[in-house]
Amino acid sequence: MSLAANAKQTAIAATGNAFVTEAFRQIEPDALCAYPITPQTTIVEKFAQLVADGEVATEYVCTESEHSAMTATVGAAAAGARAYTVTAAQGLAHMWEELYIASGLRLPIVMINVNRALSAPINIHGDHSDIMGARDTCWVIIIAESPQEAYDNTIIATPVAEDLLLPVMSSLDGFITSHSIMRGDVVDDATVKAFVGEYTPCDDLMIGSPRTLGAFANLGPTYMKVKKAQRDAMDRGLASIKRVGDEWASITGRSFDHVETWGMEDAERAIVVMGSAAGNARAVARRLRAEGEKVGVVKVRTYRPFPVADIAAALANVDAIAVLDRAETFSAQAGPLALDVMSALYDAGINTPLRTYIYGLGGNDVKLEQMYQVFTDLKAVTTDDVSGVVNSTPRYLGIG
Image 1 (tube, helix red, strand yellow):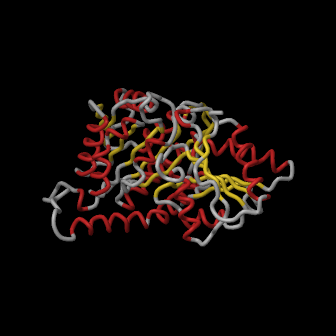
Image 2 (tube, helix red, strand yellow; image 1 turned 45 degrees about the vertical axis):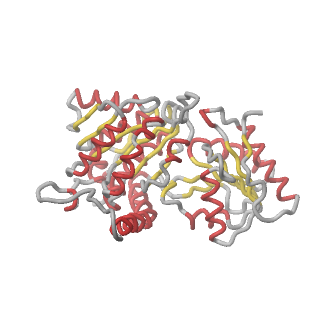
Image 3 (cartoon, helix red, strand yellow; image 1 turned 90 degrees about the horizontal axis):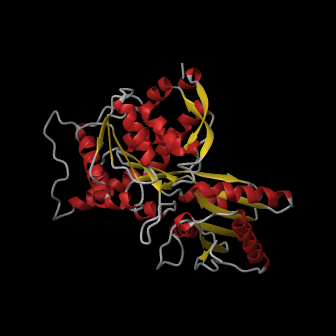
């Protein structure tokens, strides 16, 4: 009998962080090594209480820093444990050295990153500057729009990491998603346990026989061969994520797509966005649709590996595109998501007019008026009868 046939779902109202903690409780990893940092702190606080109360058998290690947290997680994973960690912002930056070590050693670690702006100036609210710094570390990155997606992504991340032998980062927007209470459905414990399965480390991770991890590779092609193997694994990532996402969807009824679209069947103008602001974009798109405007929204849920073909297919027939970034590149001609989208369109031979925007840095309010502004800008692009990428220098939304 399939897992879906036995699955039971319960509706709860909780924050994104609470949904993540519930997924942790159900998965019950062997080790969770973390250092508390706003806005992820309530995840590790609650999970530490679960450990103290004997509700999970996980070894919780509260380290003295985020660098130590990732170091301990790497050690646990290398020794054959199913190992998790949690961080945000400066914490992720403090893990920098170890991010490359985790992926280079092909360790199937799962990390929850609650997106937060990087200092300076000091800011504890959410944007995507922290994960954008980690986008080229060979971590799979999936991004939640809602507490429900934060729960689902946490569970999906485990079999993906173990299939690819790559670490997976599941992200949710700080405070907007992490601390907002929303209704969602959680699956029963037995089904989640069966879905992730018992963890059997591959031989390379076992400590029962001598192995070399992180050996010296200074001369010759060895280092490049390792990097090529990482790329090959990442290239398999989209298929693995979709397969696992579809399996989870068969249990929950909640679909998983790398790129999720709204109104794109006949859209003439489209916004591309990631994370919690997708809801704002859809809300405005619905109102404009009711007024006869053919507009749509493209939400990126899988960020690494980047779903090039899915993006190109979603945007193939529109007349104008806007890409919204919640992070800066400072020296490039657009934000990081926009650069990826532009590359995907170029690769597909699509030369549609495109505008880029920076929004919501440091948790700056993302208002519906900003989405109206973007759709209005795109309407002007289509009436001006221009072609090719236009105004690729990003505009800042929400600061006057």
